[in-house]
Structure formats: structure tokens, C-alpha cells
Figure (cartoon, helix red, strand yellow):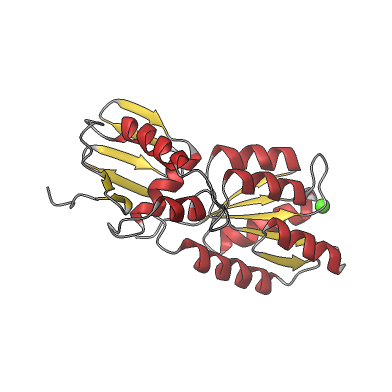
Length: 234
Ligand code: CA
């Protein structure tokens, strides 16, 4: 069973916001709506959404800046920008900031739904929304974990790191690849790979029953890290 994709709609014009909400709920999505930029940014930093539909012209903080801030936290966050502007310069600016697609207002609802589906298909890939590691249940979208009565919080980076490794089917992933795919740095940026080691050590203290003898998040000598997911039939 696939969980419903969860969209965040950031749009200040009430009739358009209500229309988008109805449209995507009708198409089987879970939808959260924000009426201004700051509220949108606040929501985007409390949990991970499968996709953000982001209006460009917003009170408080415009779509470009929100896109920029969201990308700082999560380079892989899918975003579709809704824009009334058609100037080429704006489109170039938006692409620089990394929106995945654009839809110009007034838009055709059919086209918008198709664009959303296309971006979700490209981005969802194999990213899991939850993981089970022994007796630990992790909610990667909700940034939390639970073992028995004990609850824990994950940072967005930790959740992204686990999600990326979980999608690699126990392949060892290099520190450079993790910096590129999870942190969003350009390849060959010559960055300090120790950043990855520090995050892995911190994550092991959260998820491993015995962090000095990891069972799940393993170091592979000369190769990097891999995540071993135990079989479910234990
Ligand atoms: Ca607007």
C-alpha cells in the first residue's frame, strides 16, 4: 500500500488556495495549505512534504526566497512554482534556485495535476517514508522514531541520510556521494568528508542499540557507509 502523497500549497489568494486544496484532495492527495510565505516556510521546516506548490508573489516572503531557504535545509525537496509572471529573467532566477517546474497562472487544472504527478514520479523514486530497524520504528517524513515507550527526534539531515542509504539496497555509498546527494554539494567541491562521519556517529547514537558495535549503519572500509535493513520475518 502506498501512502498518499502529501502536498504543501503556499498561496495567498484565498479562492486559488481553496481551489488547489479541493483539486488535489479530489485527486487523492493529502494537502496542507498556507496563506503566506512565513507560514509556508514554518510548515516546510516542521516536516517533509512530497511536493511544495509555491506561489511566487506572496506577502511576507516571496516564493524565490522561500524556495532558497527550503533548499538550504533540503536540497531534494520537490517544488513547483506558481507564477503569474512570464518574464524570462524570472524563470532563469527560479531555475537557479532549483524549482523543479513552473506553472503560469492562470493555469489549466489538468495541466497542473499532470505536472505534479510528473515531478512526484521523478522525485519519489525509492525514498522510503518509514523504516524499521529491529525494534526501532522510524518515521522519516515526520522526523521521529520510537522504540518501545521511548520517542526520539531526527533532524531533517539524519532522515535524508537514512532515506538515501535505505534506497541503495545495502550498497556501500562513499562520503563524497553522500555530500553530493544528501547535502546537495556539487561533486568534486573538495569538501571536508568528516562532516559525514560526524553525522553518522550522531545518528548511530540514536538508532543503534550499541553504537560502538553498529548492526544497521555500517562502515565499509575504503568504500563508505551502508545501511543493512534486517529482514522483516524475525
Ligand atoms: Ca500571490
